[in-house]
Image: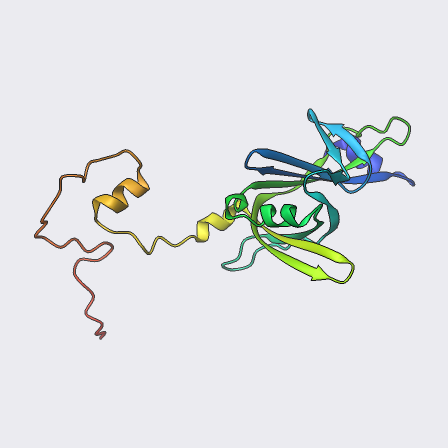
Length: 194
């Protein structure tokens, strides 16, 4: 947090703002928790015409053990199609950032640079239909979640090799390999332990 932002937040009366930016495929969603303001060449609005507005943001949690830091953003989608589009598998993994800042009440502009609170990606969504309308819970995780991805499907084959390194055809003409190559072991595991 910058010294100017710390000073502003220590004042008796201060206007604070939360800024959310989601870099969705083909669309930059920039929303804030009230009004509108310009920052970093982008306009943050309280209600995005295409996707709606923020209902709430859950406290971010630190990861423990085999969990990455995570949280939940609840949106009030602008329409049913917006909720469906936000739940598209194409949007999973989209970059998501949260900033916290202070606004000068006289000018309506940010005081110095907002503080980056979270930098991660969209994980999963859950649509909730309620009597008064619908909400969309958007789970997000830290980019470190990718460290937990398993590579259990690794194979010694051309198809897997090109999937891992697109365009690299080093195994394209390898056929009928007589010697078995056990990955991560000297020989095939027998299932019998001492």
